[in-house]
Image (cartoon, rainbow, N blue to C red):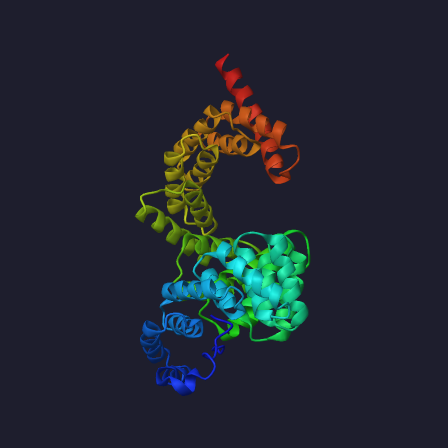
Length: 428
């Protein structure tokens, strides 16, 4: 938008009283009827092409009726006639910057800043043009000069902060706070400040609480901003405030967001801390798996989690099915076979348990837990000698981590040792 929106150059001395067309154009400009002004000035300039003041006014009218390319050409023509005409340099510089021609804009805006060092608008436009060209030192200098003229200008502080946010976040934060103080309704300043505070927190600063407060306050008046709800939930999760994170994420979900990222974030929140809810977690796991199937993919890790949650709920057949799918998807997953063995044992499928544990052994991934499970399974099947061997392996590897199971293993080892000795005696 032109800073010179009210700047209209007068026509040549005495022309208004002598030329009805100029009087008509001037009246249209004063009424902000720029389309009519343009028509009248076109007629006048067809007969008086050297009247640069009328050319300036026509360029001005063009710029406000969407005819920006024509306005640029006219301003350039005016400057060819009057090289020192500051308002033409200013308006042309602004138009060029808005059209993405920042390098050309800089030359005109710098001319204005040199001729009128107190021109705040020109300095601000010059700073933004330098910013677009990534000429950061010059942009900073222009912003500093502008803010010396208007230290309470919220828009200038915000624009300067945007320039600094990557290279000098501390200064950016200071300018954002100044912008907010100057204009409490400036939402862009608040949200950018919250983002800066988040980044500072990632570096160890204790600023997450303030960032959360900004987002929370903003959402009170803009509840439709689901992206900010997600971010607020992420902040709460980083603070381990999982119940509050769940509230924000569930609102986003009810509003129609079913993205995998949101579902997984909710799932994690329902699996830990005071927000733990295995029923809701299992529902989310099923939904995530359903999405995966629809996309033609399979998520072995999610199936593993599904099986574990079903084990907690004593849904052993369903758990076993999930673990079996894991082993199909990841044939080298010792974790999948171990969990499958546990589910099959609870289903009293002892032969299936032994078979699943055999896969663990093939993979070289036996643990104290698999030795114990194999031992009690073989014990139930009456295979006492291999059962005893696995009890002994368990006792050698558990190192007092599971005292109850160690007690059971020692007692059964004694019993089995006696049984095996008696059996050998009878055979002799």
